[in-house]
Image 1: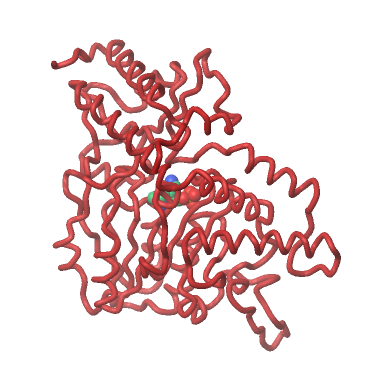
Image 2: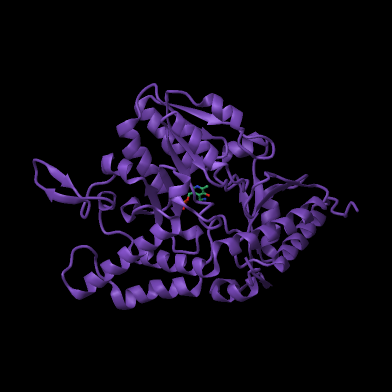
Length: 414
Ligand code: PMP
């Protein structure tokens, strides 16, 4: 794709026009959440100004128009992930709720004592804890695929962990702590050979990689709108219709039923069976606007741009003695996690903040990854479509300043 003009696109993001502690804001915490373009902000405001009504119930004009906009957004998501059918798109609160939905509904129906669930050492807590809860309730057991020191999955170990008892494999498409892109096709093929279903945590992939559910052939795929330039409080669970159809509801309430009596309740068809109660209508419609925005720029161009920033930043990091990168997989998205000898990541983050540079510090909701590298935390810069090389320069200028303040030698080796 032609190079992306980040300087042009960043004008669409009002938040980025501010200073922090007197310095221009350099926002590099995009893996936590992305900023929102004006088009998304306007879409949500216009919804409340012109369209607000409850959906799927009213005969009145406003309700019908709100319903149409809500269902049109579902169609956009279906196309965005190339699902076979829009009944396979369930709106949820975010990746966390999507995974919990599958753990509750699919898990309680299909996973029993003695069964095994395979996950990986690089999972976000939201793709660990729901499975632990399920294991506590059912007597199933977790098996964990280890990572190597580059932060890549050890596929031979994965193959050895798979067994006829494996019912489900839960794996991140992209690690939020390391940036590693996992070889999903290989994992899914192996899992299916054992008749296990595969849930992919796509929270860190959907903003960066072109998705194709039909080509990927995963059984479930979860992601959040707020990491994809959309609002908070809205996310997507993709599930194969055949599986979703056979699953019991996750929550009970309005909209998820077709008939209720005190003797027996009949459930609604897909996807409404899984959308109990009044959903985040404004969020769904604004998520549609976010997908339009991303598609207008093109995911390939976004990915190429972020990759350029990653290469640029990685080269600078390698020239800084004392700075150690955590996560050096060959296939990565724009995530640069690091530690500096003699400095706690929280101190790095605090000093960077004084320079207007926003990064994430801490365990990144992936404590097992920290344990693997025997560190309590990392500092993490993560890139989005609006970041520029000048911002990477500002990041490294701030890092050098922090190292000087802590008396860490930041002289160039060359
Ligand atoms: N999985 C991964 C890999 C993530 O990075 C995140 C968000 N940090 C989540 C799941 C959870 O997403 P949310 O908090 O939006 O539900």
